[in-house]
Image (cartoon, rainbow, N blue to C red; front, top):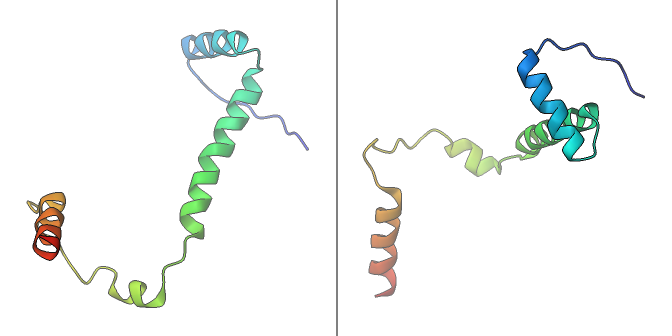
Length: 83
């Protein structure tokens, strides 16, 4: 079921958005609806990911130094292990 929605947006943005929609042969409503679907889908994915109880218990227990280079540290550890 569709519902009417009123938005307050700058005139220039509306003008550009309408031109964009026309070029894509879509309605502005369809473009906005698809954008909102994609936006909320990503948010739902994040909420839907449940942590393993062990990982959840460890979350926040380790604080990395701000100047730590994760990629360099990983590379060094892998070199030690395999070389």
